[in-house]
Amino acid sequence: MEENTTALNAQQEADAKQESLKNEVQPEAEIQESQDYSEKSLNEILSLFEQMIQEGDQQKLYKNAEPIKAGFYKVLRKEKIASGVFVEPGMGEQTQNPFEEVEKAFKDLYAQYKSSRANFNQEMQAKKEENLAEKTKIIEGIKELREKAEDMNHTLPAFRKLQARWKATGNVPQENAREIWDQYNRAVEDFYDFLKLNKEYRDLDFKKNYEQKIELCKKAELLVEDKDAVKAFNELQKLHEEWKEIGPVSKENREEIWERFKAATSKVNKRHQDFFSNLKEEQKANLKAKTEICELAEAIAAEEVTDSNKWNALSKKMAALQTKWKSIGFAARKDNQKIYDRFRAACDKFYNAKRVFYTEFKNVMQENLKKKEELCIQAEQIKDTDDWKKGTDQLINLQNVWKTIGPVARKQSDAVWKRFRAACDEFFDRKAKHFGAEGEKFEENLAAKKAVIEEIKNYTSNGPESDKEALENFLSKWNSIGFVPFKEKDSLQKEFDSALNVHFSAIRDLDAEKKMGRIRRLISEAKNPGKSDRGIRTEREKLLNKFRKLETDIATLENNMGFFAKSKNADKLIEDIKAKIASGKEELKALEQKIKMIDKEF
Image (tube, rainbow, N blue to C red):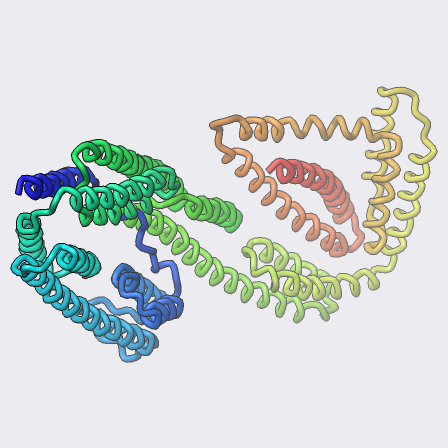
């Protein structure tokens, strides 16, 4: 009786220590974020949901069903709004709903999931009831062993089989778990009291239990080295369940084996706690990084944009923020959805404003196209007239009006301009033939300019000062000569520039270098840390607008040169226009060089 009491006390002591250790173990936290399905399309969500239902993994379904449902209706609502189908409460009913079929398909899948979940819960509850009945039978079997007067060789193996059946039997309903365990524990205690194990058999039993617990210690110690702290923690819980089911060991081994198992348990728990502490810090860092991205996105969305170049630049910045966002991990569950909604709101605000701008801009360009097409019609009606004075005045007026009209779409811009210019050219070509004498003058000018080119080619340098003076003389002489035939002017200008570059490139480069001073200063300022590049971007926009306007002005002046008949009053005007064109072309080159410098740096 004394030996049986010792065994019972050992069992009770082991169970008490087990309960104490369980209080040390921290509950497992959820480490895997529920997937955000709102970034997928409706069909992708349906396909994923249907696949999960077919796989039949109830745990996976239970975890993902509600996030899938939330994501589906979030995407559905956005697509309804985008397509004009969505109607706010009180605003009337929508007669047609193109999303009806996909919404019905989702509801059918969700009903299928709810039905399967209900069946699964019923099956699980039924299984727990079966386990309760089985464990009740096991308890009754232990009680029956105690009442039988058979020898120990039969009773002990029968008892061990009942213990094995108990261990193999699964969970019971929660409301019965405590009571059934107490009943089993009392039955075991009574059995040990009854059994009156002799010392020899008890020592054999202690040895067997000791060997099993050593194996559990080894397994627990291997878990300390497992890189997956969460997996190791879960495996440790299973080892504790096994430990609980193993009987006591001898008194001299009891403390030593327990301390060994407890030490391994503490290390696994510590790694588990550290994992979640580190995860918490990582989630804080992710939240901070995402908050900074939100602030940048909100600043971009708040900017006032009035031209397409700036929209393009800001769109690239917003796309870069979106790419960076995807590279950052999750924030804590309580913050993750909030910070995502904040970023999404900034993106939506930006892209909605961009869409409105381009819709309005497209309408404006369409109106501009109509206006320019009307000018084409008017020019085409004038081009065949022989009233040179009236026709010239009318076309000049149309060209001035043309300059006041804003841009049209790129794919239509060249076509409408060529149409307008063709009408103007046809009139002025007819006028040039009519005034043939002016054509002869153009040929004389051509010969004179070719002579200047030959003069430059034969020039011999006499030093920097002499070269500078010679350059000014050549430019003055060139600009003083009148117009040449239109088809010759571009090739002649290139030949002139090429000849100048052979002898005077250093002087011309120095002049250009001085003109670049402001641009370089702005570029330098923009590259300084903490400085904005707004100044250089604004400068580029100004230069580009000036370049386009000047290019149009020169083209108009060149067309207008053929407008004027030779007379006393026209000669001075022609000379003024010639000077403006020459000056404008030089300025065009300087502007182009400045724009290229900015584009190269940015």
